[in-house]
Amino acid sequence: MDGFSASPFGGGFDFMFTLVPILIVIVFVIVIISVIGRGVRYAKNAGSPRTSHYARVVAKRMDLRHRTNHGPNNSVGSSSHTYYYITLEFENGERKEYLDVKNLYGLVVEGDTGYAAVQGDWIVAFERNIAQEQNTRF
Image (cartoon, rainbow, N blue to C red; front, side, top):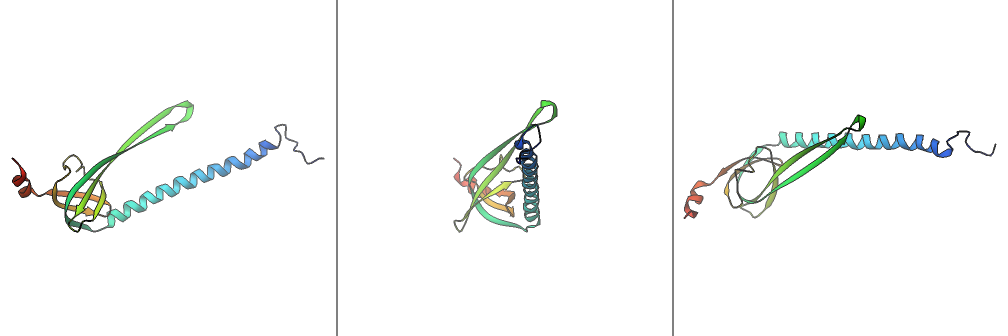
């Protein structure tokens, strides 16, 4: 024999039987690592102490993530999720962006000052400084 494969599909068919399982394993590992990473991040934030700081809201932003899923029988499904972020500036000048997990996004506006309760990377409460707002109204 000359070292050629006896397969009627040629040597490329054997290569595909090696490459496809490797690619499937790589995708599976990436998905598992992503799920574990999200779980670790959630546990870190949930286990963090809740602290309150006087701060000013300096920015708000939305992050829309859209995913399309291709299922069996050529069915296509899609899902979207919007993440809301609020950036705070503290008395020492430091700024930090927090993920809004308590639906505060629509309740605060840029320029609001007050006490923000944060837990890890989450903002969980914001108590507006009403006295300062009443002084700035016309």
